[in-house]
Image (cartoon, rainbow, N blue to C red; front, side, top):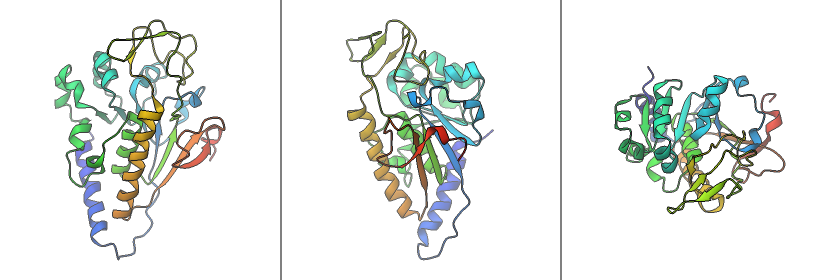
Length: 266
């Protein structure tokens, strides 16, 4: 069984040695690549089963993974509303043990306390308490930006992002607003412009208003700021690519743009 905490500790020890000797020339390390997978509409028709190498997926996509019998190496979900409303299904997904590690918000422990004893599960709030860990500087976040930063502390020096569109229709015809400000899916959308499959959200689902300008983009700006300092401090070279379409900007204001149609051929 992979112990994520031990793996992170080993990587941080390696980084601390490099930080302690910045004047020494460091050989360029071999590429260690990972793909961080969002759930945006630019992935419509994407062939997940063709993915090779390490991957990090997130939030409610496990519904689709079950259908196609494909799973990422790591799973991230730090959305309080999604964790609370879908805690039974998420706990069951983790018990299925399809991934090597899981990053969650500790808010789920109020309804799923047994997850605290699962060695494959790490909690964002615990990572934020660790000194020398870039998560300790994290103030604004979403599941996508947490997944990205997790890839950084695992030592990946090439990160490819796909399906992180940061492009949402906030209110669908099938939704209604709840008293607490969250949204309720009254009926499963026949067509969902926000996600790579139309039935990503189902009747009865509760979720946060997908506010890109005030939530997602600020969290990515913050993570890029952390990343810049972390890589300089640790003499750590990285390449980051955003795979998207001509119509969707995604994260291209931060990272090198690539055409999603060329993902499997480059």
